[in-house]
Length: 201
Length: 201
Image (cartoon, rainbow over all chains, first blue to last red):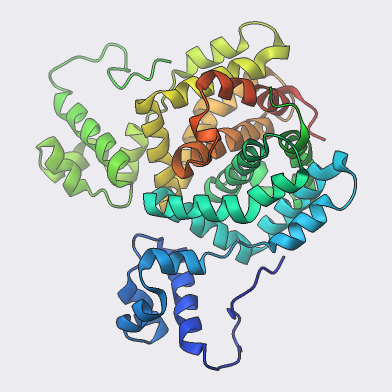
């Protein structure tokens, strides 16, 4: 899963990018815990132990910083590869396994939840996330599946994934919340298959 | 669609309850525009033109007030009736029409969005919303459909509705965002049918 472009684990090597990375790590942490709108450049700077001017020097503005540190918790290449590898008729099952597996990982889930929080509180973030999610995940995925209506299919896959995140992990509706990843994947498979390859009208 | 913001308690009299109602109206408005966590008892009191102590007198606490003014934008009885009226094989289509029609109504959509915002920002609201949505909408709906796994089915219907709200109306992913209510209902029908009556494993 490991979409890990950034050194966000402890014990990372110091180096020329250390300050920039420290700012990114602090921003990621604060956006995730406090939400986008309650996280200030000043607070990020404080958490990173740098001057606010340095945050702006590296990242320009809060929206730009957010866009840079928004990390989708999946490696897109790996996902598309894994999902498309094999029978088109079981593409929904493979996507379901990726989704369920991703939600199982607390770090990945945390990043998705931070996105959800930011999106609901800030229209400017919604625009960023629209681009990020659509371009970096669902667009390529649906396009790779090679159907017509790829954008609509991608959007509907998105409804299922986002709705699952909200209902299972934010609201915590049972028995969905305590379903195992395996059972969840099985549950999702036919609907994701439908959105990817089924008749839309 | 009966997204009636008005007097929904039968037999309510004007007069003694006016202040209470004014507080509820102010709270509904502020929760909706500013979000749960940024809405204070003090701000609600100011908007209603009363003393903060009176807000607490009538409603006890902010979570209790929120729970009271959370209005689901549908008349539950009417929804269940409309959805269950007729062939079980087309129950998904009827629910899809209710969902699409509800999202078409700006007032109803506003209330749902206020809920989504509150839920993502406040764990205590998530618990309230879990109860409200589950008990007042999906639970009875799924139970009335009379399947086993009613709670899980209700949760999965919820994922679709919440995901649609977020993706279509918060993030605004196209072409989903500009789909007509009719096309949306048609798109949703088979998946809602699946969650209500299809095989889950």
